Amino acid sequence: MAARLVMALGMRLLRWAGVLLLWAVVAACLAVTIVPRFLDRVYYRGEPTGHFDGARFFNPDGETAAPPGGGNRASFLMKRITGEGDAAWPSRVPVRLAKPAARVEGQAMVATWVGHATVLVQTQGLNILTDPIWSDTAGPLGFGPRRVTVPGIAFDDLPKIDLVLVSHNHYDHLDQATLKRLWRRDRPVIVTSLGNDSVIGQVGVPARRLDWGQRTVLRPGIEVAVTRNHHWGSRWFTDRNRALWSSFVVTLPGGNLFFAGDTGFGDGQWPREAAALGPVRFAILPIGAFRFQPGQMGTDSHVGPPDAIRVFDRLGQPFALPIHWGTFKLSSEARDTPPRMLAALARCSGIDPARFAPVAVGSAVTVPALGAAPRRLDEARLARCATTAEVTALP
Image (cartoon, rainbow, N blue to C red; front, side, top):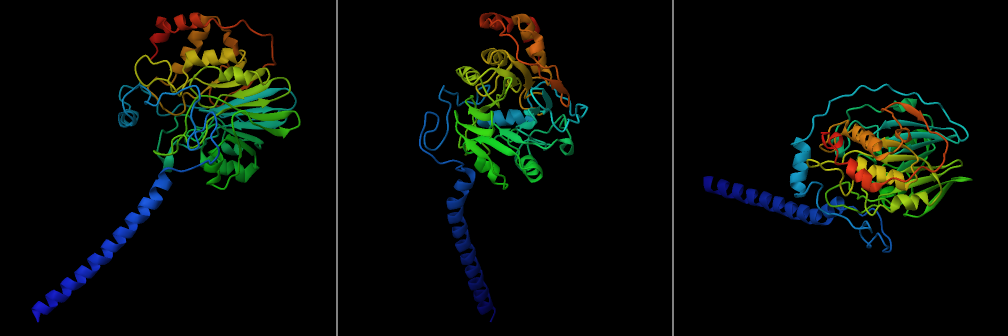
């Protein structure tokens, strides 16, 4: 009797083991089919071009595949997580919140830095927002770098937004939660480059996707042109460069608005291409997240202050707002190193410091009208300035 019970129990266990094994095989087959598609999202399909090989986008002026600062990606990520060798950042920086006007009419132009690459530009009765992020962290599922400055405009104090520019799909620039809130509230026109419309569409938000060199009409006399810059894109480990990165020109009476997005210097010709669309009155330029090893002044994908000044000069030295610093800790330089270095380099190289907006998060600046063409930058002099003790001593 006992032997029969043991045998029956053994048979039952074998049946359960067989069922579990069958389900394991099914799960493995599903994983082989589904997981790669989940990890390697295809955001765009189209014919090959000078910057798209039929599967992934690339910088036609060449690019460096290695992580900034050298080494492999695992060591780079570990250093970013641990902050090894980084200058210390404050956990919070106080911000005086702005309360913008509902509209700014005519050729008057007012810009308010919300933080990181988010800027509110008001002119011609339009409210324009760049790379909006109101989330507290920049990363998937609530992980990633945490803000040290709250947004300079409370979301509920934002005026009705007419146009949103989204430069690429990194989490600190394409924030789905913020875009969803903006769409539900204001139904703005959202313009982005190829493939990012798919990422934005994941939360039910439509966007106009354009390739480099293409334009869309916002209203008579005002257009948005998607222009080249030098960067890369990814939301996950294996979807690298499935969507395109870009800068933007908004053509406006009285001078254009240029938003550089997130960019390295590359061949340095893309600012001239943007300036060829008309005189730039106001430029929004990144200056931070440039140092990943001691003494570094820029990376393949992020300009530091020296290259930001070169971009500024090749745009025609417009009035400029330095962004992409001081909100999320993305690199190893001190929080205030980018603006301090920019100011030192401008003084040393003969750039009028009044051409750069002296603003903090949450403060507004009135953009001056177009003026006379300035004297061109001496890049050799700028290079010498970058070696001075005042600049190299900055942490």
